[in-house]
Image (cartoon, rainbow, N blue to C red; front, side, top):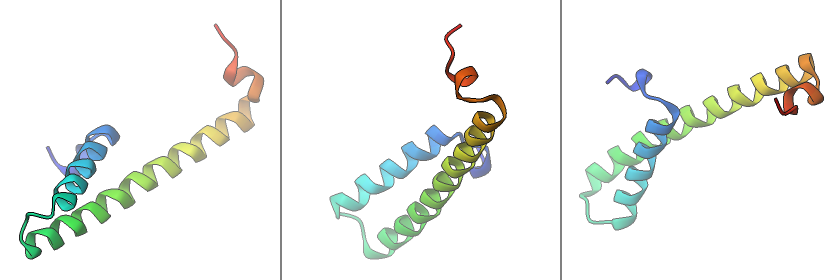
Length: 73
């Protein structure tokens, strides 16, 4: 699966795995640096996804109004 095809949740799981590997501290420095860079990239992608979702939600709230967005069906 290509990186761009991953869901938000899959990317988040990958980031958590990287953090766990780095916290263990038992990987060679070169691999740790690679993992760190990969983690930074994933973190930026996840942040952008969340920001985009927030903008979309704000637009829906503005267009539809709070009442309609949160009404129970």
